[in-house]
Every structure is written in structure tokens, then in C-alpha cells.
Image 1 (cartoon, rainbow, N blue to C red):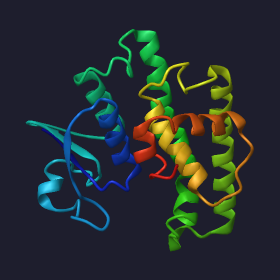
Image 2 (cartoon, rainbow, N blue to C red):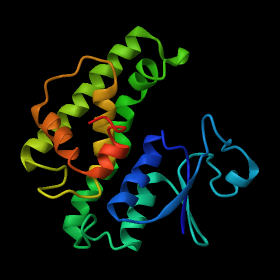
Image 3 (cartoon, helix red, strand yellow):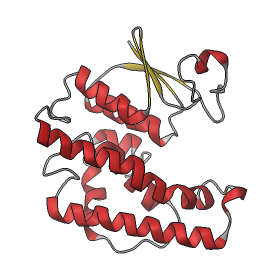
Length: 207
């Protein structure tokens, strides 16, 4: 039985949970992180010295780093339909998974902490304005890509990349800031609601 360590409210944990639903992969989950068991406990640090969630235990195999986890699970549990083996097709998927982790995550971090988490350390008006502008610009890149593909981030079929990207799109629309008019992103957001895993883990059950 696969074990997932991490609270379900974490966007990175929800990547793994959504993928498990797509793969019909059974698992058990343990609550770790903010509000639950501390990731600084010795038994957790023995699994991940970074004290970050999620961590998975697949029998005697332990793995951390969410995007690495979803790649591993797709490889290990017949997820070729999500994560193709052909080098060029896989590279297209990998590119957008990595872009989400580097460019998109970086773009939304300050604004999310300020506007959703209400973090006292993230209330500088100048930095918040710059963060919102940067996030909007990065979402514009996403809109351009979706205009090209017409459906999903890496092409006309749903892929592994749509899990981290789709969750980030959910974060964009659920954060109270002025949203630019990006028709392709909005259509993508609505398209994803046809997937049970996204309704459960992406839009937090909001139809």
C-alpha cells in the first residue's frame, strides 16, 4: 500500500492525490505539516531532511519532492497515457512541469502569502503590487500556450503536466486579486472540471 505523508490542503500534496485518482491507485494518507504532526520530528526528518511535504512510502521506497513523486508514480503504475515514453513527447510534458515549479510558483508566492495566508511578513504594498504584476505576466505565458494547443498545456490530450499547472490555475482564480482577461486560461479551468480528480483536489469541491 502506498502511503502519502502530508496535509491535503497543501497544493503539493494535492498533486499526488489527484494523480492517484487518475491512476486508480489506492493509498493511505497521514496528516503532517501545518496544524498537524510536525515535519521537524525526528521520524519525519529521517524520511525528508528538508522537513517538507509530501513524502511517499511505496513499500520500502521513500521519495520526496512533489514533481519527482508524480513522475515516479506515473512511471511505476502504468501512467504512460499521462507521461509518454517517447523522448520528444515526454520533453513537452517535463518542460511545463518544470515551468510550474520554477516560473509559476515563484510568480504567485508573495501575492498568495499576502492575500490568502494574510502573512504579516508579506504586506509590503510595493512588493505586493510587483508580485501581482509578475503573476499576471506569467499567467499570460500560460494563456499563449493554451491558445496554441487549444486544449491542454502540452497538447490536445490531458497529461501529467496538467496536474501541477491546473492546481496553480485554481490558485490564481481563488486568490482575491484583479484577474486579467485570459480566455484560454478560463476555458482550460472549465475544461478541467470534467475530471473527477480536479473537482476533488483542484477546485476544492467547488463545482
